Amino acid sequence: MTAEPTIAESATTKPHTHDRAPNASGAPTSDAITPSEWELMRIVWTSGEIPTRDIIALAQRKRNWSESTIKTLLTRLTKKGFLTATARSRKLFYTAAVPEISAMDDAANELFDHLCSMKKGSAIINLVQHQTMKKSDIYLLQELLAQKLATAPDTIACDCLPDGMSGGNCANCGC
Image 1 (cartoon, rainbow, N blue to C red):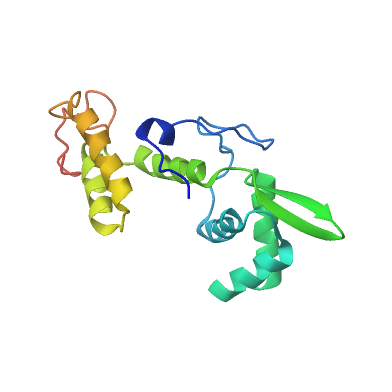
Image 2: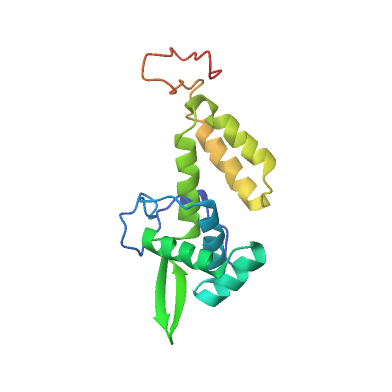
């Protein structure tokens, strides 16, 4: 059993092993992972190195997908730099080229980049209220929130419109 990461450890950048230009967390920046691709990535992350036929079998137990659909998704993930494929004994074996936590962090950060700055806190509160979390994650979250509280501003300006256009009070977005 491995120890839970500290806040500092969970924020460190992981190295990448793919050819695409990485972002800060090491994940490729060219294309986002689609919901269907997430399904296959979760199988590979959980399984480690895994042959194509095993991915197909596991994916078909979760979804009603054809073999050709799954192979197409695997090819896309390889081209995007999220998977690596190695041929051995006339079989393809897939491994994740990007750590799961890096891909998850990038997806969450990309989503939050599209939200009004004034409402990001509400979105995080909603996530915490509706997700099952381990006690160790809750303790880390409490520690992080205590640290952020020391330097948190009292208000955050709306960034929905260009600078100076909203005055921090957008009638239509409710800020």
